[in-house]
Image 1 (cartoon, rainbow, N blue to C red):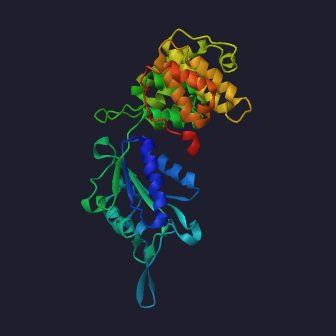
Image 2 (cartoon, helix red, strand yellow):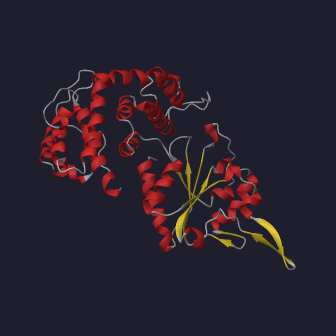
Image 3 (tube, one colour):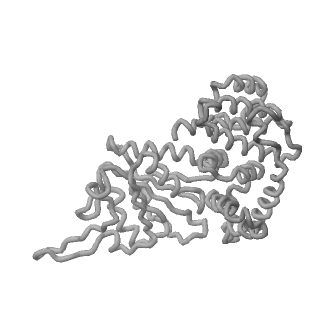
Length: 357
């Protein structure tokens, strides 16, 4: 399932805690597809605390607590890491990460916490949602089969890498537009993990974020850039990305395009992808300026000039995902829509990302 759909499900699951309809959620997926990041984004959206517990690093007593004698009885000291309404707040998210990497004894200690929201005398506050995540058994991580009693305590969703969702996130996260353009040009490299070969560095949504950091760190040391990129996404993908970035030096005048002074279209398809990604970033940067509508209009007019009209559709679709409905109120949008009326949009779901931020 694509991340944007799972994000919407997680958002509703969190909201459902107020009405008592929340069910614990388990996210499955290979390493690097953004499972943990989605949980963190839900917490940030609702401005609530996130208690992230890595079960793979715990002993059963770490979760259950330490026994101590009180008069003639033995009681259990509740671990400080578990959410408490007085200390952490009435609402929040308890995130049990790496749950499939936890030893069976630790998983067994989590049964009651997940199903009954209790562990001995401890109770999860009513306003707290319970989410969990883990890798699949075939992903070559350190995993244990999830016992049926534990699995039956969750609803289950499998996270898949999706380029459109990643691009929408990347523009708002200020990821280098050259990297976005490269993945639009080579979409099969967004996630390329073969567990049979057990690679150390491989392309994934997480490692492409690392590649963005490498582009910033080694911008003034070009002789180190290739090594830095390969360390993030692997040898083959790093070489391709470096070659693509070297071509970006021949980009047309972007300032002239957004100001309506130029409509130069590069010949190479790689450069056209680069221009498209860069123009979406320019539109985002202009979104709070008084001349934003003019910038949108100039970009929409430019989108009509791509030799392959599907590239113009891609540009405008990414533009809409980034800035939302204000794009529809620009007169040039209707002109652009009429110009591609005979084409089928490559993705008919226009996700209103900007409205929900």
